[in-house]
Image 1 (cartoon, rainbow, N blue to C red):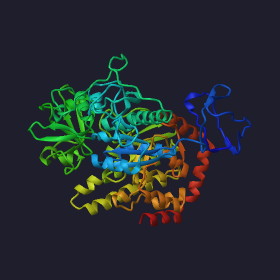
Image 2: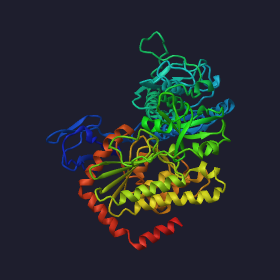
Image 3: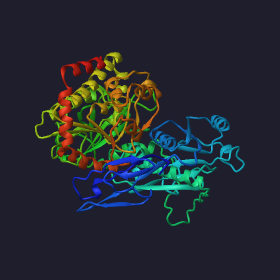
Length: 609
């Protein structure tokens, strides 16, 4: 412990029954003591302290700066996506020197490897073939070349997640294996499986369960390499190996068939979301790429709208999404479309992509109720809703890919104003969406606008209005619950809340320069207030991803609730309810009322301008 750098102790409230428990830790090097007087013993041991009616289990994680193995690790990837960012930041935070080589050719891979002479090569997200010079026994480097494959042991092929979603797999996994002449058939360093207990899109599954499993498997593989543990060969004779070679999905496999049930239509779209999209053919023969599918469970609504229509006909619209009739009497909402493949066609709300004559006379679907039962989600397409538990109100805004357009921001402002007037609540929790808390303004809508400059200004002001509603809630404690990744203005928006809670699996990109923007979202006030001016400039100028725990360490965010999204979802309502009943809430409200005077609001307006 004399080499102690940091020590973090976490407990999960769901695991204990005691009430009013608060652990306070004080560091007294070279020894560490609980402030209550109980000395902390050797690391790695399970500590249990009686709490009267239950037990709190404490599992200290100690990061030491003593002797350790630091590697020179090279990452090859198609793009620096969320998984690559997570692997990069986790390895770098572990003390390794990590270099990312994005979208390399075979020649570039060889050249970079010769220059850096890495101890390990890891490919978190690479669909290109690795040159034989980098993995053959006679390779020019001795570094293992590891492929992160999003499939269970034995699974092989380019469309693993697509098939897993299409076939309704209840369990899937990630395998880290040595590069080989035969795709995904190399010796295995590590595997990590997970349950699929929801109905995800491919990108959502990749960003959540796959990323967590991949990170675990990569760290196991690095440890195995450090300990000189040889990988095991793939053997289909092993009864536990249930993976197989799967063919690459073609556009034919991704075609929406309107004779299918609504569930199968939704599954076809979701397995292709966000790339490459599902091919949707209208009844007049025109074809589009579809994204953001939601099942409409209200058959009475569909039947009321479906008079004299056929499967595949458009029945209604809602906030840019369109409702199609399915063959089994249910409906399918499609929120976004593209007019064709490739990067030239923008992914936009479906009502903007479809021919005007098809949507102008389509009725607007009835408005859904705003407040849902706690712990539930809407069984339809609904971007904004609230739930309530006691005096805590949760505001959900689940926008596609986290992009917040002008109209979406305006609707969110209306909801926040309604919540602010609610006399029965004293805590408001901003939930964002499942996959992303927010990614800021909607760049595709801006690019598609007749006057992009005008739309950009309108969008910036609209998202600033959302933030103004948050910091103007003088009679509510506001919590930003960042359970999904966040970028640009979406990473800055939580700073306006009184508290920012997140979990260890979140990656944020708190910068604008890579988009050639200065940014808004009041960051020039709230970020320096939290981390200091110098650190604020370092964060916004670095253009690097940041783990949530680093954000907490810097003071940008306030607290980690668990290491995964599932842990966060379990702990969040318990902690929010505890806060609502505590004196801390009253202290926060007291300080807010003192602070939110005319001069302070004028200062914030200056930062906004």
